[in-house]
Image (cartoon, rainbow, N blue to C red):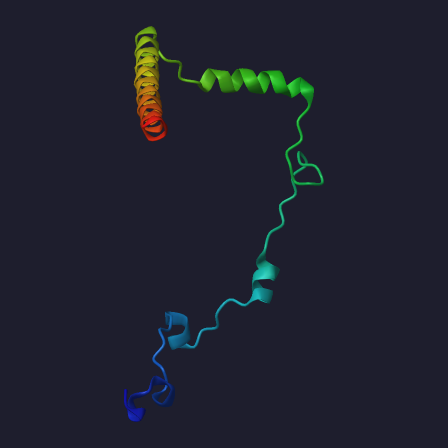
Length: 111
């Protein structure tokens, strides 16, 4: 690259936002701090975690359990069958690798 084409000498072209082009000031950190809203929640402790009493625990659990979509009997049988099939395939895979490894070790040590 020749010296006359260096960006440092010509003033590097930098992308500018619309505010910089129009001369409007950008948001400064002090302006942001002035506009920031601090929310006070009475149901939170000093660490900011929500407080809960033992008396409200059971009703909250009951309301959450109502939201759960439970599988039907047919879906449950399908899920169980898929799980058992996966376990059988995985067991066969581990058994095969173990058998081949054992044969390989035996071949290497006994010959």
